[in-house]
Length: 349
Image 1 (tube, rainbow, N blue to C red):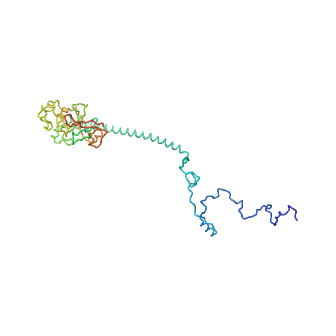
Image 2: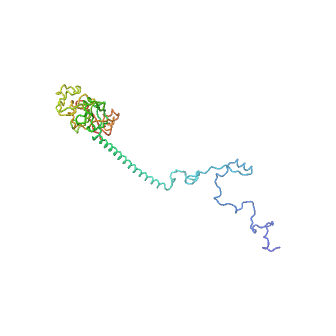
Image 3: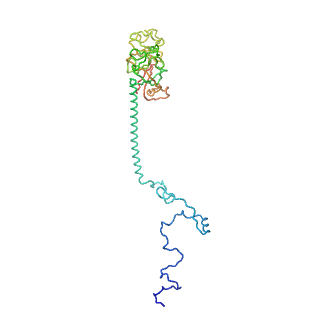
């Protein structure tokens, strides 16, 4: 016998080596503790990877091999980087839960600042538009004045005394009478009368009839509304012009004694509206029109545009609207004897 402690380790009772002495553990078929992967990161705990198909599991068991199951749904990750579909995560838009990014308040403030700056820019654009529009209107007015020589160069018709050649609400461009005088103008007045227009070979016409249409101040009074009528013929001072007159245009007068302004108190033009039956002088509206009373000759009309300035019920029938506001003013008040006169209010350019 060997003494204790010498030689081989003491055997167990059944003669097998003592595991406690040789450092070996009994092999019970279990996993080696040193080979167990304890890294939780490598442990697949995703339940989506589990094959929950019982039929597939039974087939795999029967075949002796485990086939991989169908792939699970792809996880959806939101903008914050968290997977959706978990019950423990708050849903977007829940009251009281911050869903935006921490700089959202600052960005909103910046946006409001930009908006305020945009409002300032809009006001600047508005002021610029107004100023540029006013400058354009002024420029047009200056150009019209340069051409016409009259300020303002536009008038608007208020009454039907010049119908059908000028109508209520028409805007009329007026030119200084001596600027471009027609053939047969009387003396240095620059005005061609209807009587002269009938006799000339050129058959001088304005607004579909012989003779110039003039704008004048009645009796030279600039405080009264100007009148726009046709110049019919010229009379000299103290002239008995009854013989020159159209008998239908002198009213009930049978001779010069019955005719107003006859003999002529001074030299000037006898005038009449195209729609009127009687001369202005025969009605006593004005004396013969002196050249100094003439504002200018009518050259061009623009239908209905004068109604913008009239602001009058006279334009309601023309445009079908009331409460008009605008640019020019025009012809037509009734005289005390019932005749329609072509009074005009001068239109600012």
